[in-house]
Every structure is written in structure tokens, then in C-alpha cells.
Amino acid sequence: MTRATPTALKKLAGNPGKRPLNDREPMPAGRIGPCPRWFPADARLEWKRIVPELDRLGVLTSVDAATVEAHCLTYGEIVATVKAGQPLKAALLAQMRAYASEVGLAPACVAKMTAPE
Image (cartoon, rainbow, N blue to C red):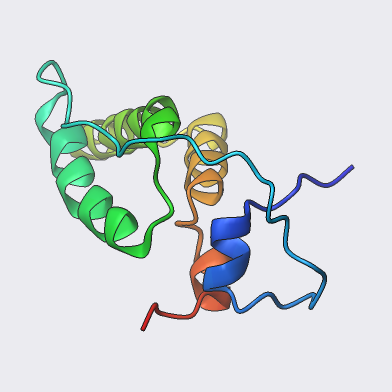
């Protein structure tokens, strides 16, 4: 079973399936908050890199914080693993891939988007 793509991502992709968009999709109010203070340095850098751009594209809302946090923390763990000279685990990379696609960061997701005017 495939997951439904959020309407915001469909709009950025130009609605490739040309199906009617859900005009009644719940849109949580508010924007994502600031980067958590307790984040490790590499996770904080990832937050500062992706959140402003995703916010500009209009794909983040207040309820996306946990997914973005998980993405950034997983990224930070990958960087720490590489810096320590340890081999990367496939499960960690799979987590990163899953979180990235949830917020529209996977290369396939980005390739389907069109920039807002």
C-alpha cells in the first residue's frame, strides 16, 4: 500500500498525476519552531541547512517538528559515525532515507517539485 503524498508536495511537483487535489486536507496552523537547544552540533547544522528552505517552500507545519528532528538527529549520527571511522549501518541509512522522503528531501521528491512563483 502506498502512502498518500501531502497536497503541498503535490503542488510543488506540479500535480504530476493530474488527479484532483484534496482541498479539504487538514493544514495544521503555525510554523516549525526553532532548533532544539539540546541538539548535537552536526544535527543543528542540518537543521539550519534544511528548515529555512523547506519553510520557504511551504511544506513544513508545526506538526512536522518530530519528523524533522528525527531526520536531523539521524544525519548527525551518520556524520559522527563517519568522523569516528566506523562503518555505516544499513538501518541508519534506511532511517535517513525514510525521514528525508517524509519531508520532501529525497532526490526523487525534489526532482518532482516546481519552485513557487
